Structure formats: structure tokens, C-alpha cells
Length: 247
Image 1 (cartoon, rainbow, N blue to C red):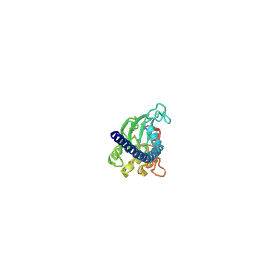
Image 2: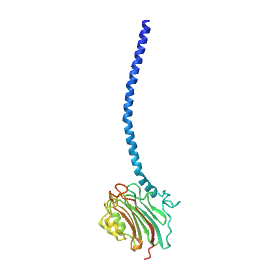
Image 3: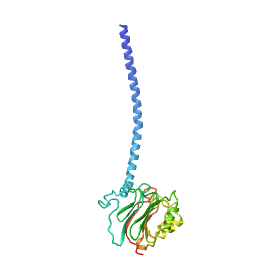
Image 4: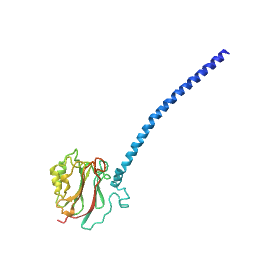
């Protein structure tokens, strides 16, 4: 009888101890919940703020890759189809968007430089075209933040008469851009290159021996008060028709 009583007391004692343990664990989980709920709310707010600003960059990315069917010509691919007279070339220039979306250059309705072709980069992107035949002579980019301006100067100095030159900025086009390089680009017809500054957006088409009707340009200054992408201005675009070189 005493053995049964003792065994019962031990089991009761174990149940009581187990109950106390469960009671002790419950407040801990409750405290964890109190801590995690505010963290989850903060993360949700941060994500919402990011997504509210993301559409601008996403829009430019889709536009740059030729996937924005709302603004582009249906079925046109990365370059919109443009009809020009037989004695003119069609072109499209698009600067980079911030440091996220690479620039795009189209010539005669074909993509010749851009993210899809993996031949665009930070700095000044350049396409050289034979102004008589429309043949693409060279595509390249020159890092004007941490690179060397000498290869760009050499390219500009070696241009043949009648060459069409298309240029588009990406991220930072001006830090290493020397006075000599600016002068050579201005001789191609650019007006804005002399004032091109840190993280400005810029697109330009001109050429060696180019007349005024073979030159087009857009320039947007980096200004935090008006920038579209915080530290960068808006993406710029120029498209149209330029006369063939007849010299």
C-alpha cells in the first residue's frame, strides 16, 4: 500500500514539474513573438518602399531590352522600325539609366551596341559608321571614371572624313574626359561635351566633316534636386534620320 502511494506521489510530482516547465516555456515563445512582429513589419515597410521606386528602373530596363510593348512598335525587337529617305540613315541613341541599365545604339533598324550584345560599358559608348555605305566600322566603350582617356583620343584622331559617330553615356562619362578629348568631340558637332559633368546623361550623333543636319544631341545635368534616379538624371533618347555623307 505504501509502495503504491509512493509511486502515485512520484507520478504526480513529475506531472506537476512537467506542467511548470510548459508554463515556463509559454512566456518565452510569447516574448519571441513580441520581438519578431515589429521586425516583420519593418521589413514589409522597407520592401514596399523599394518596390514603389523600382518601377522606374524596371521600365527603363524593359525599354532598353526592347521588351516594353506599350511604348515600342509591336514586333520591332530592341530597335523601333523607322522609315528614312534613301539618302539618309535611321538611328536611335539611348543613354544608360543610372548604373543599372546599359545604353543602346541602333543603326538602320539594327541593334549595334547594347546590353543584349554585351558590348556596352561604363563611360562613353561609341559606334563608328562609314557615312557613305552605312557599314559599322567599330563599336567600343571607354571607362571615364577609372579608365584611360588616351585610347578614346586616339580613336577620335584617327577618324576618316565622312565617318558618322554615335555616342551614349552610361553611369559616369566625364571624370577622365580630358580637354583634348572634349575638343575632338566638339569638332564632330557636339555642343554639350564641353560642359559634360560627373554622372550627366548624354547622347550625341555627329561626324567627321558633318554638317549641322547630321548632328543631334541631348544632355541632362546631374542635379540631386531634379534627378530621376537619386544620383543620376533621366535616361535620354534621340532618334531620327541623318543624311549620308556625300563629300
